[in-house]
Length: 407
Figure 1 (cartoon, one colour):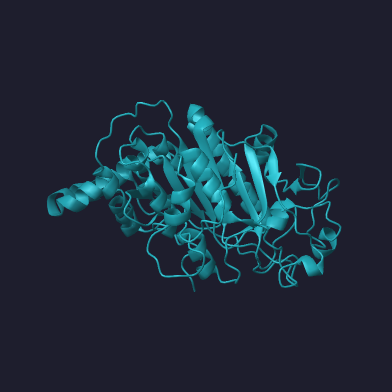
Figure 2 (spheres, helix red, strand yellow):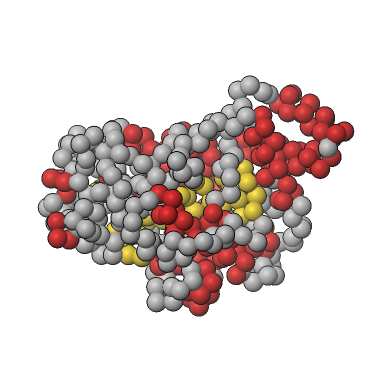
C-alpha cells in the first residue's frame, strides 16, 4: 500500500524527537535582513491526497447530464440538496461557506476540468507527476516548488527563508536543495510538556546535537500550537484547520518561511461519499475551515497571500454501487487568498455526455494544471515563463501560464 496517500498514524514520543530533527535545518538558517521592498508575499500549496471529487465540490448543475450521473448524490440549485450559488452554471458544495464568501469578495477562484498530463489512475504515479512537475512518471528526486525557490534571485529574502512542509515527512514537491523545515501537528496523549523538557535535559548531557534539534522543534511547535492541542491523522476534518493555524503562525514569524505545503489525506472516496452530508462533506468542511484559519491568522498579511489547492486526479462522472466514485481524470483546483483575482470560474466545460467523457467514464481535462501553477508562480513570485517552462516544469514550454490569477 502506498504510504504517500494512506491515512497517517499518530506520532509517538519518538515522533516528537523526529519533529525536533525536522526543525534542525531551520534553526541553522542564516539570519536575513528585511528586504528593502515592503512586499512580503506568502504562497501555500495544499495537496488533497486520494483524489478529490471535483464534480461534487463544484457541481455543474446546469449540465443536463449531471443529475443522472450522480443520482442520489447530485447537488441542486434549490431544496434539501442545494449548493451555494456561484455563477449560474456551477454551485459550490454547501460545506464550503468560507470559500463562498471569499468568492463573493473576489478572493476565491475555481479552475474546473483541470488535470496534470497524467492519464492513468494510480495514486502513486499521479502524485509523482503532480509533485515533480514532469510531463509523465519518471525518476526525479526534486519537486517543482523546491526548484521554484532555487530559481528566485539569490539576493531576495524569500528563497533564504526557505519553505515549510506540514506533515510527518517532506512532500516530494518540496524536496531539493532549497532549505525546508518540517512540522507535524499532533496530539501526544501519553506525554506532556514536563516530560518533553526532561527528555531535553537528558539529551543536553548525552547528545548535544540531538538536544539542539529537539529544542528547536519544541520552540517551533509551541509557536505553531499557540498552547492548543493538535490532532494527527489523515482525513480528520478538524485537523485541517488546526494544521493551518500552526502553519500560519510559523509563517508569520519574522524569520519564518513564506512558502508552505500542507498535505491532507483521506480523499479517496470509493464508498459512502455522500452528497450534502457524508464523508466528502466533512472533508470539504475541514478544508473550508483551513481557509478560515489562514485568513484569521495571517491578518494584514492575508492581502499578499495566495493558496493553491490541488489533487492528483479526479473521480468518475458516474457514481458506483457503493455510493462513492472511483479514480478518474479531471477535477477542480481552488485558488484563494487576498492576493487572488477571484470571483470567477475558469472552465472550458467539456460536457458530461458519454462521447464527451474521457474513455467514456471521466470528466475530460481541458485545462493543464501546470498552466495554473505557472500562472500563480509568475504572477505572485515573479518567475519568468522561460524558467517555468525549462526548469520548474521541464519540457512544458508550450504550456503557457494562465494570466491574471493574482493581483
